[in-house]
Length: 139
Length: 166
Image 1 (tube, helix red, strand yellow):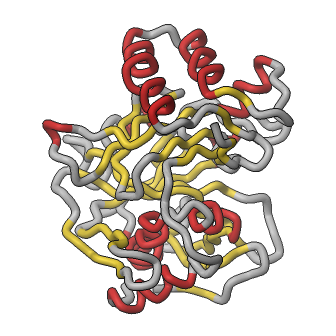
Image 2 (cartoon, chains in turn brown, green):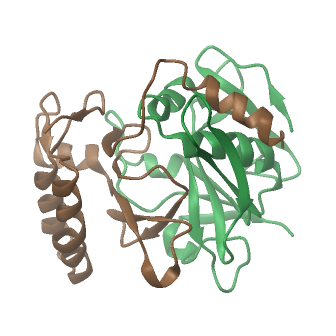
Image 3 (tube, chains in turn yellow, purple):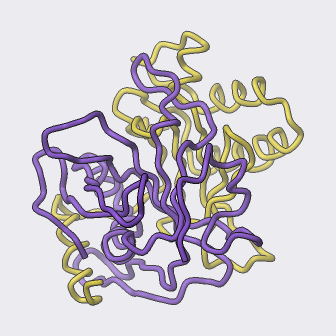
C-alpha cells in the first residue's frame, strides 16, 4: 500500500474539477442496477434487508446506536421494465419505494420504508431520480 | 501490487486473483465513469478506500463468490447478477478523508472488529485489453460467525462460493 501522503495526493487528483463539498445525494448506478441514497461521506457498513433493499450504516457508529446514512434500492432498472415506467423522465423516489413494498410486502420492508427511507429522503429533499444520467433532480 | 498501465475506458488496471483459481491472476479495471461518479459528488471515502484498500490488498482476498442473488438488469439482459464476482477479506484498516479538498488528507485507521471488506466486480465480455471485469463497488459487511473473512449470510447473499483460501 502506498503511504498516507501518496494516497492523499491520489485522492486530491480525483477532485480537480473545482471547489465543492459533499451534499446528500441519490443516483442511479446503472452498472449494478440500483439507486444509491447517500447522506454522509464515510466508510459504509451495508446491512441487507432482502434482495431489494440494503441499509447503509456509518462503519464507526457504535453498534448500539446504528446511524443510517442511506440505503440502496436494488433492481431499479428491472423495476422500471416491469412497470413500464418512462426512464426518460425523472421518477419519484416515493414511487420506487411504494413499488418495492408492493412487490415484497414483508413487515421488515414496510417498517424500513415508512420509518427510515421516506423520512430520510424527505429530510434531505431527495425527491426524484433521473434514470438516464443518475443525477439527483433538485427538489 | 500488480498495477498496470491504464487503458482508455479505465482509469486504472490492477491484478486480482482469478475467480477460477486463486493461484492465477486476472486483470480488473476501474472505469473512468465509476471514479467520476464519486468525484462529481465529492464522495471522498470510496476514492480513499480504493487507493488504500482495494488497490493495495485485493490480491490478499480470502474468498471469491459469484452471483448476488437479486434482480439486476442491463439493457435487455435481466440476469446480470450472475456476472458479478465478489472478493472478500478482513481488512485491518479503513481509509477516509478529513478536511477540505485543499488542505485535507487521507487518514488510515484500524477497522472495527467483526467486519469484512467486500469488492464487487462485474465480469465483462471478452475484450482486446484482456480485462476480466470492472471494479464497481466496495464497502464493509458484518463478518460471518462461521466462515472467517466472509460476509454474514453469504450462503443466501451470493449464488455460489468459487474458492476460499487461508
